[in-house]
Image (cartoon, rainbow, N blue to C red):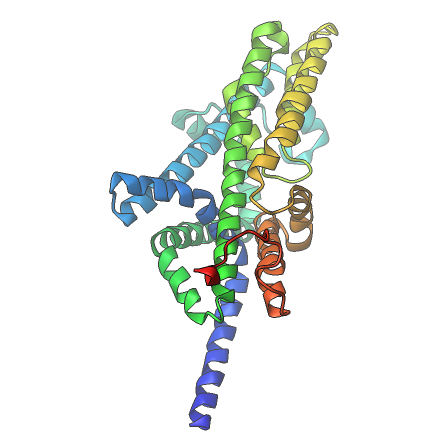
Length: 365
């Protein structure tokens, strides 16, 4: 009997090692999946009030999350391409670049962004620098694109099945209960992860709305030459950028300030610089600082310390890479909840310690 148990244990350890290796290889995709699961689970449960099937609810949640994000990023790329082309057409950027960068030699300008314009540019050899670059880096570009699509597929599939089978996974974990310690710990972790990660989603939405209102109000009060382009789009991107630690929203509103200052610089009109400085102050105070001081404490979870959570967002990408932005807060919640719930019980502390003396306990009934 002992030999059979030993054989089963060895087999289980081998299977666990293989699964752990696979999970480590795709740790970024799995981390983002857990992040999205807890961020959207309340919305998934809310749709249950409409008596929709679980699969329909899961597809709806992922669609509401993925489709707007893809459309927003695609729209941003298209606008950037169009605006850059208009800027290059108006100013001799290509000629200046061709004199200093050999890669731009032979380019007389950017082709028309139409099928006929691109075909004519290809026939005339105007696209040869781009084709040569793509050919020389074909392996790298292919591997990067394939890896991105594979990880994106994993994120969608894992998030979908976590939404559908999350309760089943939770029930399986609770089978390993020991004197209710495991149940208490897992339920506490589950609640806190949902509170923290759902709070991040609410923070993105709130910052986006505040940024859109601030940018639109700024444009309504300044001359045309000092306005920021596409305030609604810029506000939405500012909200998404709020997830990034340290730099955060600055990667959006700082370039916006530069773009708003560009017409005044090109037209030698220093008076417009005053409005641009005003825009930067509005972005720093109204969009960046005030929401961070007022909203983040409400969105940071029930027990997790706001300062520790901010440090997790800062140190996570430094230690683990980009996916550490999502992994570090999860590890923080798991660790703090263990220290708060399971560890005292394991060390022999009275689970009723800290309760008021007049608080009724289960044994009293």
